Image 1 (cartoon, rainbow, N blue to C red):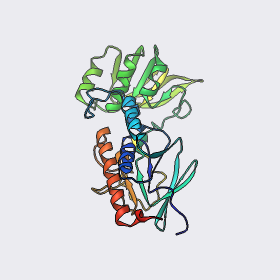
Image 2: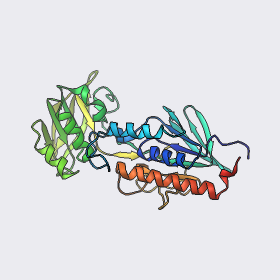
Image 3: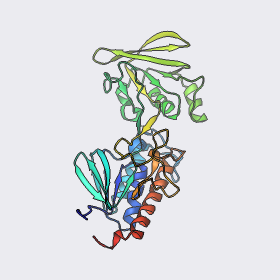
Image 4: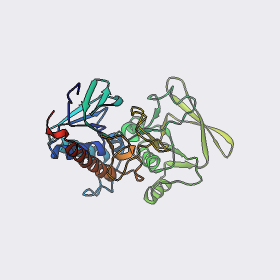
Length: 311
């Protein structure tokens, strides 16, 4: 073997799946390195979490901080602020290249979750960070007293509309569907909110402005309309963060990493957990459980392969 490993397992991503995997790896006394651009992932964007066991109500940011605090009680190396660019397998080791260098380990757990899906309309890229936003939890306070639009019809869009409804003067929620999706409780809260107006069958055509967003162009049933707004929150779902993976790692038609019941991917030594995988339901509590499973599977792989006997 040409090189020595830097860790027994490298975890890519520090959302609920990655942090949970880190705790379980540490409990198995594995040398563990977590590499992530940030801590929390999409969970940190959640406004209110009402379905995580043990908490009747907690914000996503608060829940993530408790995850981090739990992880920090163990001997786990956390490399925060680094973006993984590639993963390659060489003999018995897997190399993880990132913006701060490269690390090697015999096992890797991919827990990178998803990234926001863009609208893909004129003006979106130009005004990103200047009125176009993808996280209401992060950016809603910047739009206090302003008129905003929210694009989407699922739970994330409903949450964004409700958050903004407490701050903005007007919230215009635009969905391409004939009805709102998401949970019934959220739907009723949105429909009964005095500052939220819902547009059905709305197709976004462009976002306009000068230095900052000034208006959004859209169509409803083929009729062109324009609405003056100072903010546009894009909440139309997300896509798996897998662009760094080698082609040997099999993905499904949605671009999600395919895993078996033990979180093993198509490449020996590479495991995956959380929203980046083809596990059907995308929930914080499920991601955390999948992270624990992936860690236990990685431990079994390392033990059975003789990787823990010393390098």
